[in-house]
Amino acid sequence: MAKPASRKSGRSGGSSIFTGVLIGLIVGAVLAVGVALWITGNNPFRFAAPESAPAKSTPAAPAVPATPEAAPSFDFYKVLPGDASPGPLPPAADSAAASPLYYLQAGAFQNPADADNLKAQLALLGIETAIQTSDLGDKGVFHRVRVGPFRAMDEVNRTRSLLTQNNIPATLVKEVPTPQETP
Image (tube, rainbow, N blue to C red; front, side, top):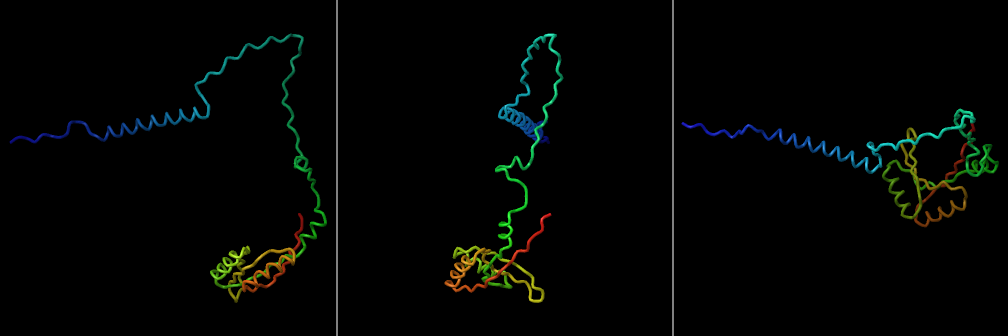
């Protein structure tokens, strides 16, 4: 009986694939480095131009030691544009900071989805609102929908009339900011 012929020819396909991938990675890395150096203009193989021979100095000229220039001194408030000088705020700014802020509260809800719905309804009217969440202890968590802040009552009245035209009741909330101490 005859033996069947072996299909092995002494060469496996696995090592040739590995060799091809390895050569491809090396060629790709060399090309990437070459392109990066070409784009940035750095040429590590460029030789520096030979320096010319220094001119002979006359012996009569004394050698002056090289001293570095003194770094310029900057004053923070002189560098600022407009020559802003540090100092206390003018009294007009203090009185403006102490003026009360007015808000219109359009609703307070325990369900956050209801607060979001009212906020969306007000956004369709062109009114910007903010939802303020607060925990009231035994009563639970409330989500307040507030419009503002307003500094003048005429703005409050205009916004309130727009809300009443659209059947949205609003309550005026006055907030007096507490003055902060300056350190």
